[in-house]
Image (cartoon, rainbow, N blue to C red; front, top):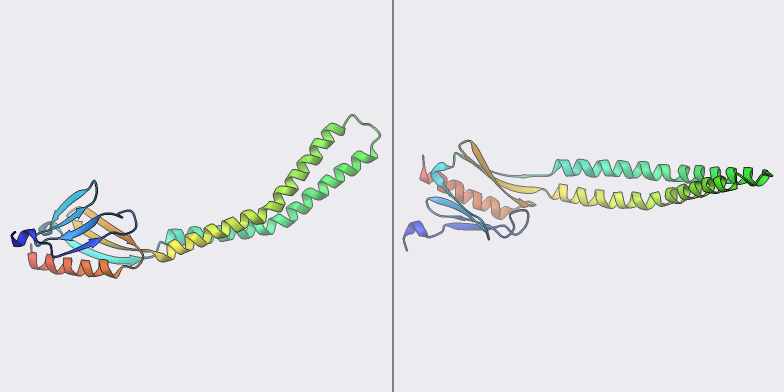
Length: 185
């Protein structure tokens, strides 16, 4: 076994979209290997290397939007339930005062419709609670963020991301960076 065949270091992806794959650094190349994936990148082809941690601002924004929607839904639930209940009582009161029975079937449908709207309005706080739980999940995932190792290969970039702040990926990137500097152009 020659020195070119021995690996210097490796990094296993335990979570995220690359879960189950691993990066292995050899003296002259970087290999990304998984169940159905094999990619070998010569170190001389790497123009730049970047490793960074970033939070997912889009998920944080969607979480804030869901909180705002949940608050609006909560604020509207009480007045909507009151309005639908009052409308149902008014139609029922007009029906009792009317001597004709011909309009009772239409009025019954209208009363049932207002009753249904009142029930739906009373369930809006449950929907708002669901929105708040979804917002909490989005906030958690957004705040957790990702650590991404990016290799620039001429006009192409390869990004390798792992969920959360990952010190082991930073360490791997440091060894890779040192090896790229030793390899030279």
